[in-house]
Length: 309
Image (cartoon, rainbow, N blue to C red; front, top):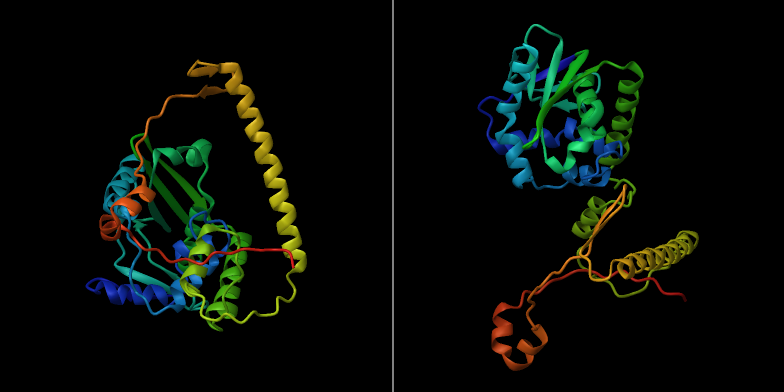
């Protein structure tokens, strides 16, 4: 069972506030740790901070603008009619779960998620595959609405149109609900930041929370010696592997000599010419300090360093 929240005529700020009031489909993959572009920590910040601005970039704009087109292509390919719902849905049993769906399928207990993808990500849709965070998104919508089927359709820009059909899975839905409930009850509701996962998204959130160092008094570093020892081992392994990588590249370069291309049955190697022009900022600073001052762009960040005691 679910509650319908009318969104027709709702202004953007109200809609964004509704989205902050629960876990949406696009949050599910991040909370489960399978979204390469987000993290549970990022979702936590989105739900608990006072900001209500929606993320906006070219990829998001393209996806929004092409949603109608993807829905039309799906109808053409399947013969199924789809419609907008004009509602946001909230689970009554699990009120922390909300759903703002792209389309509902007319005459069928099903919904449709519309996606656009770069040609560079075409391999992620090959052989019937679906990016895993999109799978979690669709099952989240099924969990909220109770619908037993969810379609996902995608236009691979400049390449192809494709669609998939996902069916209800009791075990998967139950596990997804449990993970989301744990996240909401033990992190969002209590204001406790989820643990980091090593992703760039976590780096960005930590920088947002702790942008500037304000205290110079050292704090006692308790419980991290083993982890920092492991960090040193990892850095040593990376250095050794990078040296081996560089050696292999040098051997190939010696073999190629003055040739720009080389190929085998498995690999194609290019070692081409690149000309570039870079500003000599040190010279400008020394000889034209007023020009340097006019165009210099200050930056602020925190440097993380680890040294042996």
